[in-house]
Length: 294
Image 1 (cartoon, helix red, strand yellow):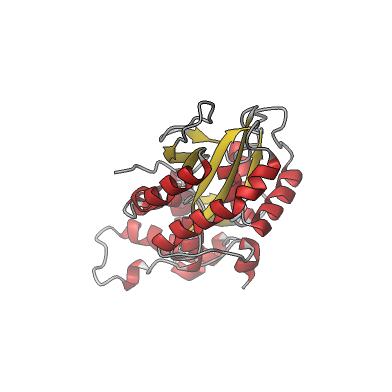
Image 2 (cartoon, rainbow, N blue to C red):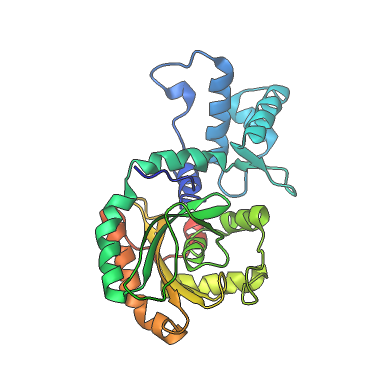
């Protein structure tokens, strides 16, 4: 069994929580025995339904029928535990990344690696290069499966390896499908460290690249993580139409120049789409930010 210690769900779960709020504790057929936990659950429900702009203390107090002092104390505890986060400027509250961390355990049941393996091995045969399956894992992405072609000179990665989002094809494929608040959270928590002289360390430049990757359906890494190695990746979607993982092909620059990567794009996109279908999902062509506004 694979253990996804991941941010591919990094957004998947935050969007799930926002768009599909949990059932309030008061609506449960079995009332909770501990009142403080029920109140905390209600607070999370209210904030989950509040959307990207967040929810203020007064709104939480009114919606939960708690006085402001009680609501503030519970919210402060939830922030400390990572279930909520507070915007530094607006002072409003949103769901925190702890929810995603727990959500990864749920995604583990999907056995995505087992579903993807036949498709990954076929892609490896087609390209004769290193093929990777990656999942989001909070600050970094996690490689959960990797297959190597028969080439003597090849890119190397192993299950369990972690990579940064902003300078890898896998990571950028995921980032390109997350909405802007999610991307900004990753930038704030992880930064954009320079891995090679070709690493993009400017947020605006990276955002422009991600918009292009989202439009074309695949992301590129041109010696941004490791000199001499290029890669291409495409996003995998779950049954809710949200990004759940990414598949990549990587290899030496001598074989995988940009033109070769562009020619390989159709095979990578097809592999990602096949895995998405196996997960009960499909491709996503709409902008994640536009989906928020709908």
